[in-house]
Image (cartoon, rainbow, N blue to C red; front, side, top):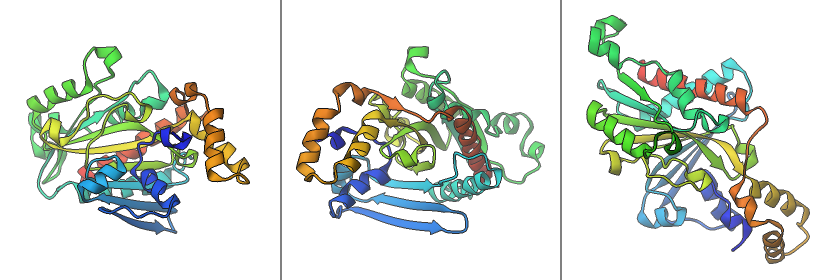
Length: 301
């Protein structure tokens, strides 16, 4: 197997690029792209419409929205606000917010590992309203209509001894939300998308899938409510960096010779290693705030 075939990614957009490289169209998959030059934000919507498309892409049928913002890792409040507004726009397209909704936000990840702490940080910054509506009614918040938001940080199995899906299933059964939004850190194929890309999907999310640590998914099939997945790639497969660096140096070789050389060069140990940015502490803090603001904007109107 070629080295590039074993490199993992959580981004549907990167899965489509694999087919573009070999100039092959995927039946049952539609791709729509929009670039806002003024905001410098590129949005790509990948729609997997058929079982054939799902099989080719290796992902469930549904919508995958990718927001690429080159300055997302930079502490620019105005730019982050624009990204938050973009997130809110797409959430409103995926969720019917015309009527009052009960929304559970699940912050997936390990708070003890910075690159994996995105989900908990989002929940920490979220405007929680469910308890206020239950205790004091809608008038306490000064709005005629308010969506009831609640949040939970379920931790990871090593901390709790329980699958994340087991915890969330129990909370869903008790609180009966209309929608579950799961936020998690992802893994990317391309270094340039690290901390600069947000993926929103209506197919749910599989905790740990990007780093090969497969856990039971948070999906509509499992939870029996609509599940929206939001993620940002905070790590890249170490083998990706070696592969891309060497591939640029070996352009003179035939493609088959490149693959054979890279297969020999990249040791199996590299496939279990992941790399993150050196300023990940600050970046994850900004990202957590930006996504939570997107949720607050969407549910506060």
